[in-house]
Image 1 (cartoon, rainbow over the protein chains, first blue to last red):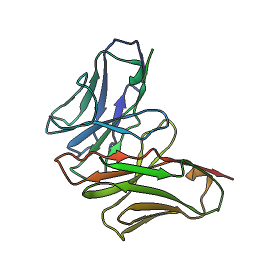
Image 2 (image 1 turned 180 degrees about the vertical axis):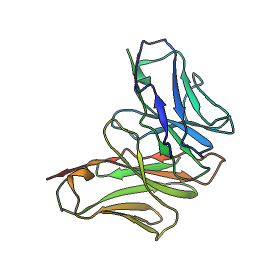
Image 3 (image 1 turned 45 degrees about the vertical axis):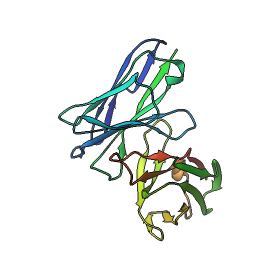
Image 4 (image 1 turned 120 degrees about the horizontal axis):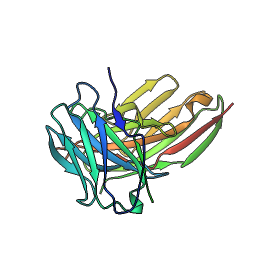
Length: 111
Length: 112
């Protein structure tokens, strides 16, 4: 059974740039979620995708957007990067409301 | 608004010294409470799901319990390899998404 994989593992961007993060779901999982984890904090829900549709969003601005593909993989896009966007971005997959299984994240640094 | 509070923020134990971590929550319509372990530079690793008050789950040296207001993660005779951040999260039954609301975590250090 293949777990959740994320790429890249680390990324450095400049304020104002755009970034795309990628995630492959665990096999058999049809739901993917994205979380942002700042240093010393718990993960914060960004949004969730099911059947290629966004079906829930946390308190994040529209410059955070995403996609889910037919094979259940997913992308997180962030436009107009700000310094406060520096964080660990976690992708998680699940089968319906079951436990979320997380990848090891992408560490984004905005300078 | 759903709230999850974990205590203590940090806990230092000697190997073999048992203790408990607390997770108190305020939600409307709990679907499930989740415990995760997170090692530095890694994503959270799923440990347990609890669905109703009175439920208990065990795995090796860990036991999770749930009441209507809080959950405890009991660690019996911990070893240095149990050192990690332990995260608690709640999932509510309203809406169609399955988002988790996390606490800030408890950083556990077990000294040999």
